[in-house]
Picture 1: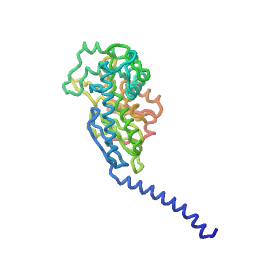
Picture 2: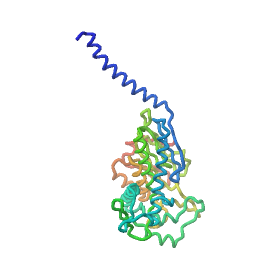
Picture 3: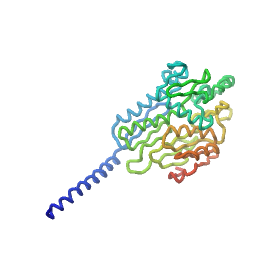
Length: 346
């Protein structure tokens, strides 16, 4: 082989590599220069916002919002045509005395039972007979009837929910399920699955404060997610955490509440008393890989209180929490500030 041919033999592969590297960085630069596309709508009884950073395909956003409608028709406790509503009403099809569930409803109930058991019943998906007596949205500040509350309390017992595959039996007549404390996380996870299946690698799913990130920013930096300061404007944060590919979910007394005779009543109810928990906490924020876990754990840890809630979080792998107490103090779980970059007062 002549020297000229040897040179060509070396240069051609080198040129291919150079072109490939150039194409990679050029396409990445183009993606970074694109404005993100976003869609906002009122769904799941909250404001839903989906933002995609590395695509200009509006059809992807339409598909993501359509998933919210699809799952609301399964999980809503108040929508009469929903599967859960029919289960609670006893009108869902049965076989051998058991209700027949869709895969999605069975899966979510299974997740709810896991956290009901994990929390020792402090979080309980059978709270519906009690939670249905409270109204935190009308602005009327009316307490439940004491007699009705006392009659509802015995029906709250997750150990009397018997789930076998897609078949469900209740151990007591009159039991109902409320999946509102865990459904948004499950839905966020399914939306993330959908976005990834459409080739999205950089996005934020915001289901009314349930945040789930797909990847990182198109420039390779993490997303900066704010932890809201309780009772402050949504733009005011207690801390900002840098994350990628993870979920950030908060549960707090500031989300749905009313005041009556100087007492604040919020929506996180104690299954033992039927009244809101009063344990010195104002919010719990969970960072996890799956948003359904963040949902289940944020409510469970709030219900357990600071000490027991922190013990639970520290016993679980790859899950982190920050508890905010009534005095405004931030309490981080073990390893939180080593795992994430945290800034304050923004």
